[in-house]
Amino acid sequence: MKRNRMGNSDLYVGEIGLGCMSLGTDKTKAVSLLHEALDRGVNFLDTADLYDDGLNEEIVGEAIRSSSVRREDIVVATKVGNRRIPGQEGWVWDPSKAYILSSVKGSLRRLGVEYIDLYQLHGGTIEDPIDETIEAFEQLKQEGWIRHYGISSIRPNVIREYANRSSIVSLMSQYSLLDRRSEETVLELLEEKGIGLIARGPVAKGILTEKGASRTAKGYLDYSAEELASMHGKLLELADEGRSLSQLAIRYTLAHPAVSVAIPGASSLEQLLHNIAASEVKALTEEELSTLRSLTRLNTYEQHR
Image (cartoon, rainbow, N blue to C red):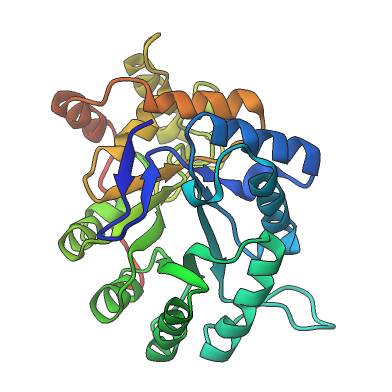
């Protein structure tokens, strides 16, 4: 599998990674899927302390320890910022330095690793104590608990602040043919600053797959159900035996030079193998990219600009 450099960092990641949130809670099945992914060249695993109350991190950690792939060849990414208060339901947002410094210990323990390759802020608003948050990540780097840090956000105003004020190496953000908001300003900024995009949602909740017509009824972002149904048929016509619709969609996200890795989720072996195969199909030509853009639209951010 082709490997890309994550921004200007020393992390090199396979262009197809694995978003682990969709693995589920069946530990045996999930570990088996992770082993299959690692054996086939996937080396970027993205999880979070939030997923299944930490169980997802435990599963990822177990798979890493029992894999034939060396730990140093795996890029482990997890996230922080959502705190559970004992006795209360749900999570509260806490990007404070104190919480980040304490929370990393739990992730390290659940993952069973000595360091985290990429520690990401799991959200964020412009009202956050950004300097304090950056201080926490920088301290964790200096102490050797993390190698690099990044943010996970779809808010341009937050993204700009971290791009200009911190040494983040990555941004995780939703990016697909149906969500091209990043193309408005964000991708250009990332390329300029040497920050790699981790593209989540490349198949847009399954709409950009062969069976995606059944998923269009609720619409998607600013697309109506009717628009999606019509568009799905047109996009499907562009797929062929060499590249399925979902593989076209994944290759679209990888076409921009600022994108380091696409992380489609997978809950079955069939899904996993099909996603990984997107790394083996030919890249999209400029003509094909132009055609795909003409069938979709350049969405724009309405808030948090």
